[in-house]
Length: 139
Image (tube, rainbow, N blue to C red; front, side, top):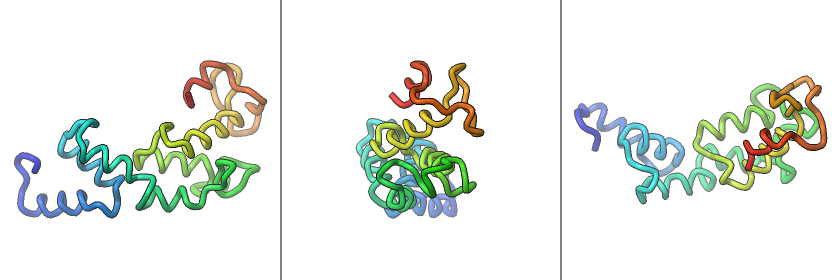
């Protein structure tokens, strides 16, 4: 249990540590209780993020090609498309280590990466292959 935790805070912490939302459990373990990534509880929570809870629900509606809400625009509709789902999944703790996240990131980079290393949502960055420094983000 965390140091200097009041009774009310203790109840809140116990709620955050419940296993039904592993992303929240992971964040509570690592950010509130300062447990290291190698801790067995942390490893278990991280593994479960893609299997149950909010992240799993989002992954369930992902197209096998890697996108959400439409193949034509990875940015629109706002808050429902690939760009936004990747932001949420990142906040929930998923990384490129998850093959579905990696696939979506590679798709996003292939659509929006520019030669100068920047990104363009207007389509001006469209090309077949992003530069090496950008490909490294999804590597």
